[in-house]
Image (cartoon, rainbow, N blue to C red):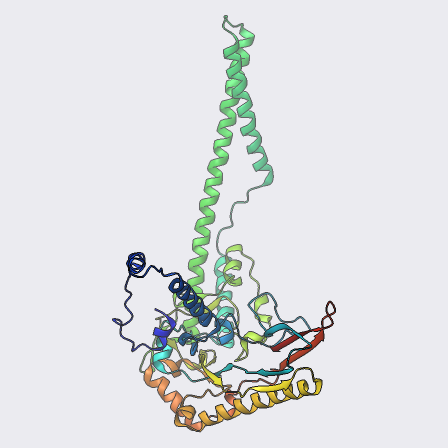
Amino acid sequence: MTDAEQNHPSTSSAANSPSAIDLTACEDRFRQSTGCDFSEAKEAMVDALLRLTEQHCTGEDLGGEIIYGVRPSSRIVSAFLLPRYDQTGAEDETSDIHISTMGIDLQITSATPSSITVEPSLSVYVRELPSWSELIDPRNDMMPQIQLSREARQSVEQRARSYIDERIATLPPLEDEQTEEIERAGSALAQAERSYDLSEVSEDAHATPLSSDERGTIQANAESVERLERAATQHQDRARSRAAQRNERNATIAEIRREAFDRAFRELGIYIVGSNGQSERPVSANDVEEAPRSRLIEAGIEDTLSSAGDSEPETVSAEHRDGPPTASGALGGLREGVGRIADQFAAPQPIPQKWRRWSLDLSPIRFDVLDEAAREQAIGLFSDALRIQLTETVTAWLATGDGQRDAYRSGERIFPSHFADEASWNNYLTALRTRRPAELDDIRPDISGVALIVDLDPDFADRSRFNLRIALQ
């Protein structure tokens, strides 16, 4: 389904059902009747497809009118202005497409009329509160995943770690495989192969009856082969036994880990909560996803536990402007469909993202490109007009009932009880709107750094020409 269908679910499926046309047959009939072909029509179709692709990549199509679950800069890959990278190098400059300047470079002659008109056409994204139907729509991928709070996670992991330590200490140690033993086994295999080759050569080389010494040599080689093969077989049996013991130990440790976490959840009173708000059963290890590269899991199998992860500070990066990231550790979020936990054990989360595109109607800007003062004035007029138009557009929307209902409130956090079902989500939004009317500063994008660039420089190769750059930055 296309993004347009996602944002307009009422569109009938019959109207969107594909149909096939034999363009070759149509072109043949058209050529017979008119003597012309479909060359121009084909070019128009290609141009239309390219335009559709461009609109989708730049967010100009219906799919870009509303963006769910992520920031628009993560979804739109072209024609989206972002702030320039800072000079400290703290931001990753290789992760995503990052466009900070868009415009045009051209040349003009000194005889060209110097009056230029710039007609800006741009849009901004304003954040909104999602409805319940948008929240649960799997196409939007925006339903929050319930996470344990940092305090609850650390308590569970520390308690489980102590149980794991205690149980692992009672397990029998694995039989060590010494390097010398491996080398002896390898030498035995090599010697067995050499002895076998010698016995074969000796038997093949003597067609005449053998002397007693020769028969003795052959028999000694055969006995050596048998002895060495027996030693190699014993080594392989021991290796298989050690592998089986290791697998059994790992399976035992995995079971110990599950039991330890089940016990920790139960003793700390962390339960799955039903729709009526009552505790149903303790959370189990199977209810929780394992975080990537879990130190506790790796440590349990290797018998070297470490608590280094507990001392890691919480930091807020540019990717987590709406709140700190979930603490890392052996435990991840609750699996989908398991249920929810009490708010006291859950990590607060930002409201899922929903962004709506707003077009800004800016008047054309005319100036004398050869006049430096006129260029600077045009740059100032653009900045003032952009700021005023954005403020007027957002303020007018906030003055409506839709604006007060849908506008995002910054800095708010939600807990599992807020999105347990449709009624709880609607109650949360109603209480939020009553407690905190929408304000301009909550949703107005920061465009203080957006500027019109007009650079005019003489062409060193031809003094009668100028290099002109007009861009948004």
